[in-house]
Amino acid sequence: MERRILIVEDEKEEAQVLESFLRRKKFTTHLASNIGEALSIIENYKPKIILLDLALGSEYGGDLLGSISNVREHKIVVIAGTKPTLEEILALHRRGVRYFLAKPVIMSSLWAVIGDIE
Image (cartoon, rainbow, N blue to C red; front, side, top):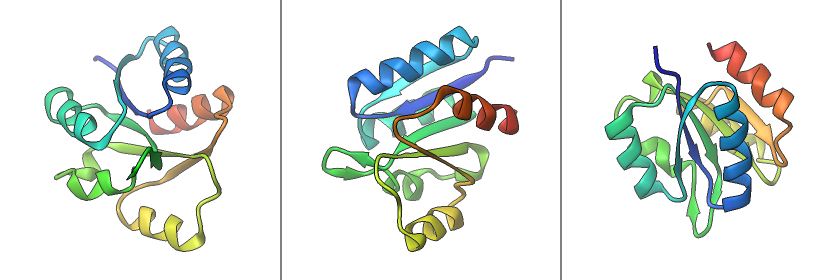
């Protein structure tokens, strides 16, 4: 079974680091730098896991969750550059987010989360 992950990250260097790590772990990766690209990839490739940065330039990554029709089919991992507020964490949790990682992402932490998902 193909192991598909979507990385939604507008910082190119950060996205490339995540992608390189995940490819070495035998995942098929797709990159999106904004919500529109992410929605297209979700529709076409149906990734099991979505790594979602909350700060996507002028867009709020959490808004993607409201646009995904079957959000519970995907395992969402939020990556935050700044510490989210309790209200933000609770709102994201209600939308299906169960995992949070801080930037810079520590690969062993990412791997532990992915292991828990799989």
